[in-house]
Image 1 (spheres, protein in one colour):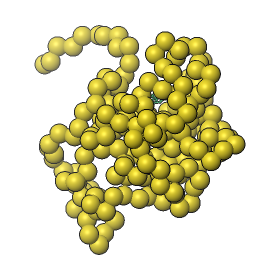
Image 2: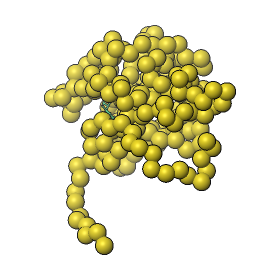
Image 3: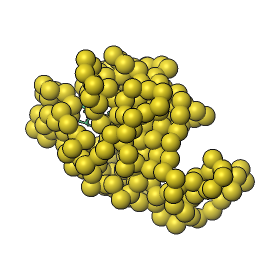
Image 4: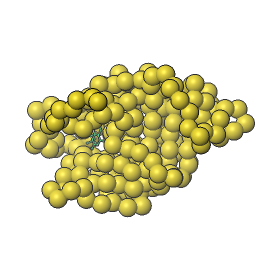
Length: 201
Ligand SMILES: Cc1cc2nc3c(=O)[nH]c(=O)nc-3n(C[C@H](O)[C@H](O)[C@H](O)COP(=O)(O)O)c2cc1C
């Protein structure tokens, strides 16, 4: 039997893929980019965990459209270039020591906007997966109300052509290399160790 220890981790970031949300800034044509890792999908709905003090949450309350862009491991430095910034002009007090305001994360992260088909916020051209989505539900997280659980229905999915299995809607698993956020370090995907009985390819 493996002996265990009761520990008190400061965060529970055991490793989830990074997503870059593009959301529309209110009152103008520009869009913000928000790196997150609290994102997972059930059927065609993404569940996102967002801090209420960030620009993404404020934008989504005004306009419930977004693009959930999935970067690959090669983009980790671009993610990190925008990591210490916020699109909130008056940086919230608890973030002031480590974060600064940045109105144009596209240029800073060397990301290129590409128009979406069914939502207003643009896609991030460099991300191999870009899902246009619309918010369907918002629920406060916990009792102190610092964060919100957002449900977003995926309306259209774009992927880099090199990621597809020709003639199908399948992703080429040898071409897709997501980037994981594990205790504030970026990891790429390791070797395949098995296959589920439900795999389609
Ligand atoms: C890899 C990574 C993962 C993150 N995950 C989340 C997350 O899941 N939810 C969240 O609210 N913030 C997350 N953050 C922090 C936000 O990106 C950060 O608060 C940022 O300032 C928000 O930008 P915005 O205010 O322009 O939306 C993450 C940051 C990084 C770099």
